[in-house]
Image 1 (spheres, rainbow, N blue to C red):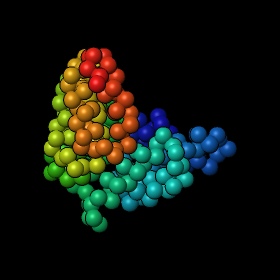
Image 2 (image 1 turned 30 degrees about the horizontal axis):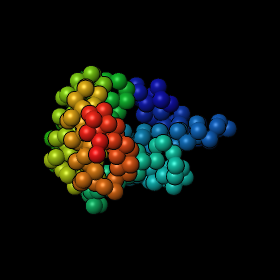
Image 3 (image 1 turned 135 degrees about the vertical axis):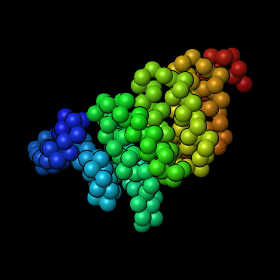
Image 4 (image 1 turned 30 degrees about the vertical axis):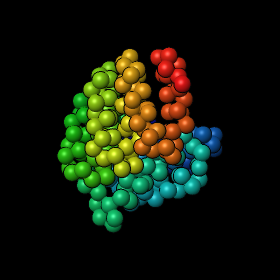
Length: 215
């Protein structure tokens, strides 16, 4: 199923994931198959079906490693207030290309999604996907700048804390600890109740100790 998904054969992928879900495989395998079945519908542009699949998955697997991803996809699809979300079709295509390892095509598709999203709900997702694709190419500074742009442009977006944390992580990975610390501290100031806050506080403490500035 994953091989079919990566190659773009969505019908074969859906069939394989359906078989895995109904098989006698382990709970872990069936859990992953159910999530990927939703992803397949998302990539295919079957957004109503995908939203229902993500919702069912999140209810069945409340503590899964995929639960947050499923909920985020569901919220994105439903953010159109009953109408189509601008750029969502292009964004789904970009995610599919990225999963298949076609990074050049995925970057181009993510750029199209950003344009079509017109600063709507899909815009931040497209920007973060671009940052991840740049990171995968080892272009950490460009990726950090992109993530920071997402955080600064739409500070009230659901993904703004994620974007700021990603910017901090990328700065830290490239040895720019002062810039990383600034982003982590800004995240805590702006989003103290974010699910990212506890781990970010630990990172702030580590960087302060490293710099010798712990109060």
